[in-house]
Image 1 (cartoon, rainbow, N blue to C red):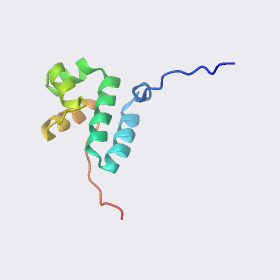
Image 2 (cartoon, one colour):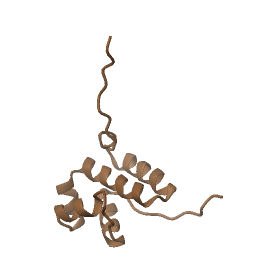
Image 3 (cartoon, rainbow, N blue to C red):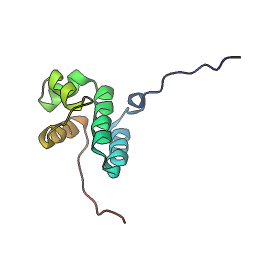
Length: 96
């Protein structure tokens, strides 16, 4: 009997602002820049790239470029994206 598998996509589980905030918080806590960019891309797909780009005030192409494999979004772009995603950035002391 063959095992049947399905493709798993984190974007399918990012259905509301609470889930998005928890996901980004967990990824951002690690501090790996590539993982942060990838997490923003996952949320962008969940929200809809075109809608998010428009809400953030950037072009759809610019969003794909910023969040692509070789992307390096500016802080202004990240701030605009977080706002458009319905979350905010906060800072807390680092636990040793």
